[in-house]
Amino acid sequence: MINGGKSLHGRVNISGAKNAAVAIIPACILSDEPCRIENIPNIKDVNLIADIIRNMGAKVTKVDKSAFEIDPRGIVNPVPSYDMVRNMRASYYLLGALLGKYHRAEVAMPGGCNFGVRPVDQHLKGFEALGVECDCSGDVIKTRTDKLTGARIYFDIVSVGATINIILAAVKAEGMTVIENAAREPHVVDVANFLNSMGANIRGAGTDVIKIRGVEHLKGVTYSIIPDQIEAGTYMAAVAAAGGDVVIRNVIPKHLESITAKLREIGVEVEEYDEAVRVIRNGKIRKCNIKTMPHPGVPTDMQPQFAALLSIADGTSIITENVWNNRYQYVSELCRFGANITVDVRKAIIEGVPSLTASTVRATDLRAGAALIIAALAAHGTSEIEDIRHIERGYEDIIEKLRGIGADISRQSIGSPIVYTA
Ligand code: UD1
Image 1 (cartoon, rainbow, N blue to C red):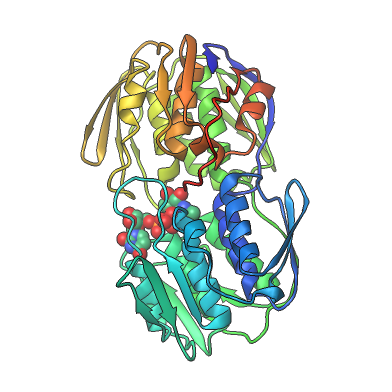
Image 2: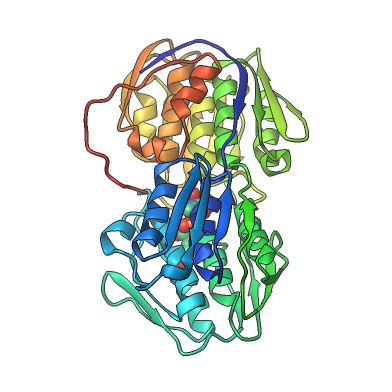
């Protein structure tokens, strides 16, 4: 329940990056010793991936709200539970990690947010180049190899998941692996930094060519996950939409450059500090065109939040979605607030309206849900957002954090069962 139309003021702390955590937790399987991972966001997706490796025999201890100790030495059966993995897109990282350690892996086809076909052909192409046999005839991907051998792999499309998965599989392979046309997202770099701190030899993460020289052993380490770029961007967009003045702390401003640039174009003031950004919006929101791109472009995971913000801009904005095929299912929900948006394949044409009015809407996926919160914060009156489990699987304490900066927001439980959907 959100009583909107109130500006936001104060400070909010950003949690660790979800998309780094869901890769780093399975990456611990590759270690020969226990690892301590810090700055883990306390969200359902992360707790689920931790449960999956615990279920295989790893000892996963939650040391405090944001730290896990993970000892992979007890893994007896390297086959993750079908029911646990099938609804979580990031469970594909178990393929790379289990292949790297045990030379075999069987993982149910990944599900995840429902925005278009989500193929894994580039992952499989990379595994095969390393000498892995892949069988995808059923709904479980079965992979095995006698030996992983380094190879040169060119990705036909920039894929975060495929880049990380091949790093995981290649880190203990014999010889050198070269990934060309690699993804450059901050969480790709974070996974490589984590593995390097364990003794891996990965060079070039953050560029489009990554070189991995295989090593025999990886040791246990303590590692702290980077701040969540998308969570930070979501609060930035929320302040821009609702108005106000908020300092967003525990961020890496460099990771937010494309989001900051677009907000400034829209007429929002953004001040950058070492580990914080201050977002101030008093005046009108200007129209702006946005094209989502792999990093360092505007992240596709910010596309719905920008659409919510631009729905109250002065003039017509065009968003072009270049990463996913079908990421506008949320638009009909946004229009219930009075937004005027038409979708034409990959483009959303947003005719700005002077203000939004409260509505009852349903979150269809994680970032769509975040966009609905942003719209409700800007809208006058009391809005109701249903199915917030989609939002809470990716945003730690979102209701408490928004309340901390002055939002009138509360959670109402209607007693529905918890279902894992990623
Ligand atoms: C990750 C993020 C997700 C984000 C996306 C793009 C995680 C857990 N999720 O998803 O939030 O929206 O990056 O930044 O980190 N593709 C292929 N073949 C493949 C793999 C991907 O065609 O083998 C296509 C996809 O359909 C999509 C594009 O490549 O159109 C990008 O996908 P990818 O970067 O792989 O996304 P994910 O890693 O799944």
